[in-house]
Image 1 (cartoon, rainbow, N blue to C red):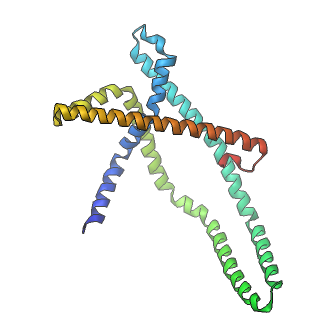
Image 2 (cartoon, rainbow, N blue to C red):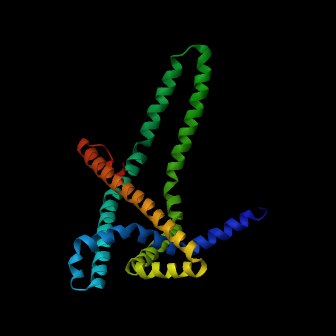
Image 3 (cartoon, rainbow, N blue to C red):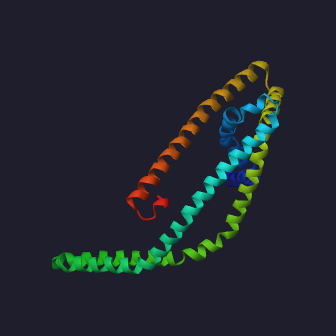
Length: 239
């Protein structure tokens, strides 16, 4: 435990190096049910023609086409709302602060003399806090610009992870077979059977939970988006 900080730093460095592979494996695991859906429900006619490779290619392409289209539409809706909300906040912040200050000063004038000192002291603290918050808002843009390098690095890892996820989806049977061979080389027959059973049960439970959460998020998000847009809530895409 004396070198726990060094160990954590070393472990974090390993994770940073392997982050594209981890991202690719995670994306491949999440997208695999959708690929299987296309193979079994949409392009199943290719089985009779023994065009299994073509079926996998079309399934992977269709999966990423849907995901990319969804993300593009989401970004096109979120970015304008976020920029408009930030511009409105910067434009109206002085107005809101002035109203709050006037309300607090009016509150102090209506109190007894004994309490007015406490109210005025509280007002001073609140006004100082509000001024500090306003100053922080004024520094947001330079801070965001300073994070550009980090964001570019993260974006590079994500792009590489997407490329690796495509490879994993194309060769998932071969990769699983290699992992089984590796596990069989280190485990006895009985332990290997128990290991495979545990992995299968974990995949079924976690996979079912993940599918349920994604479906729930999609349904709730879609209904919320439609209802908020009908009501006319400001900046509803951000909600």
